[in-house]
Image 1: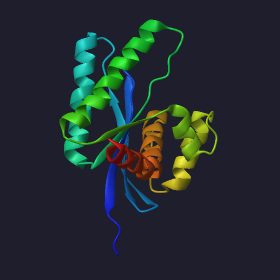
Image 2: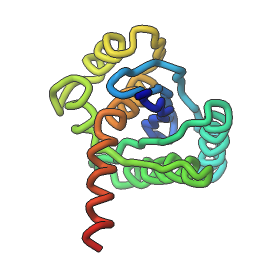
Image 3: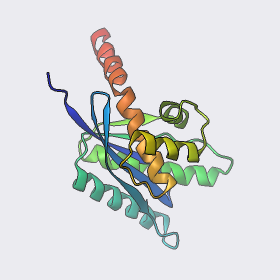
Image 4: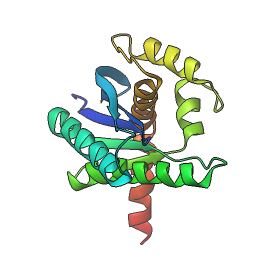
Length: 173
């Protein structure tokens, strides 16, 4: 029996920098494909910055054709304006793969860190080091790209249980 290879896009949303990472999962085997950061120009209007994020993520989806996507959930910080802007960037990160017909999952930051590092309150440096261990060929040049790869790894590890839960809901309905 041959295991199916699933290409996963991980996204770590941010208005200034949105990290992205692509991995392939075949059973429990993970392979690095690509990663990077989509930047928006802080001198532009919010609408134009969101368009830049949309266009950047759309080009990644088009170039790498992922089967599934995963987005890190937003944490609420002390500044409501920053939280709102982050939420808008996150909306773009959810919308672009959905418009392409790609199923999108969401994961809490603590679950992503716990899955990759083993501790839910791990530092960004710890996440980056574990990405190099789990995906030795990866070349994440920014913490945002490393975080996006971590989101993709989290999805690879939890997608089976999510699918099982969804199937159980359908049976009960």
